[in-house]
Amino acid sequence: MQIELDGKVALIVGAAQGIGFATATEMRASGAKVAVADINGDAAMAAAERLNGDATETLGVRVDISSLESVEAMVSEV
Image (spheres, rainbow, N blue to C red):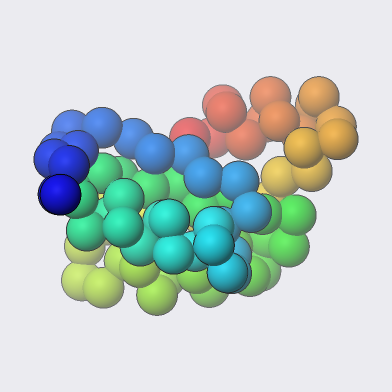
């Protein structure tokens, strides 16, 4: 079953690789704008670029979810 997510934003933590990246891929394929968040900022940006293709519908952002300040900064950026 395909879920239509046009006009929605998906913020996925741990999305630079593995299950998180697979989830981000599915969300993007369903039409969502996707924020790829990960503690490894370079990997998050690289994953966002892989998802992006020719569009500008993804964002890579570094986040340390053990830090309230980092989470608040991520949410502000998204």
